[in-house]
Length: 246
Ligand SMILES: C[S@@+](CC[C@H](N)C(=O)[O-])C[C@H]1O[C@@H](n2cnc3c(N)ncnc32)[C@H](O)[C@@H]1O
Image (spheres, rainbow, N blue to C red):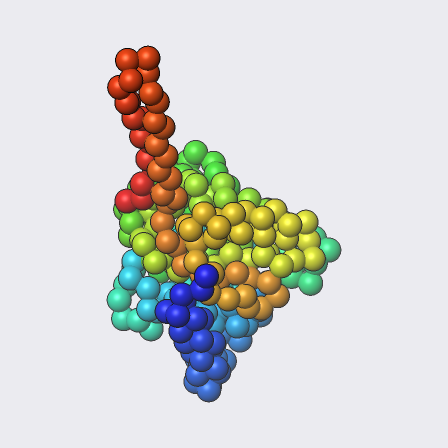
C-alpha cells in the first residue's frame, strides 16, 4: 500500500519540476547539459534538484559525455555545500548514434571543463564492477554518506547496488535509467528494480523522461525467520536468523 507521505513526496517532485521550468536562467543551463545527455530534460532537472538538496555525496555510474554529471555538479554548486561527486565511466567509443563519439572520456572531460566543473568531479575511468574501481570508490566515500545514486550504465543495476549500497544513506535519492526502454536494458532493469521495491529496499517516487525510475533507498532487506523444533524429550529449541539493515 502507498503511504500518504509517499504520495505527498511524489506530488512535491512533480511540482518542483514545474517550478524549475520557470527559473529561466537555470533551466537554460540544464537544457545545455541536455545537449550532452541521453536522458530527458526532466530527469536532468531532478538530478540537479536531488544534488542540491541531498545530504551527502553523489555517486554516478555511466557518465557518458557528461549530461547527467553536469546536472549533478550544478546542483552541488548551487547548494553552497561542497560535497564529493564521483562519476564512473568505462569509456570507449560510440558509433552509429546521434551522440556518436570517438572517445567518451575525452569528451566527458571537455564538457565538464567547459562549464567549470572538471575539478568538482572525481572521474573514475573504469568499469563499475572492476576491483580497482570498487577500491577507488571505497576510498573516496564513507559508509552511509552517499545522498544521491545515479545509475545509467548497463542492464545490471542490482550488481552495482549490491556493490555500493553500504555507501548509501538511508533515504538516499536514487535515479535509475532504462526502467522503460526500447533497448535490451529495459527488461532486466525493470525486474531488478521491482524486486528491490517488493523487498522494501527501494521506494518508488515516479517515472520521468523516456523511462527513468526515481525513488529513494530504504535500506537492506529485513528477513527474520524462526524454526521451532520439538525433540523426543519434549523440550523446545529455537533457531533464529536475521539480516538486518544498518
Ligand atoms: C546511457 S549512457 C549514460 C548517459 C549519461 N548518463 C547521460 O546523461 O547522457 C551509458 C554509459 O555507461 C557506460 N557504462 C556502461 N556500463 C558501465 C559500467 N559497468 N561501468 C561504468 N560505465 C559503464 C557506457 O560506456 C556509457 O557511456
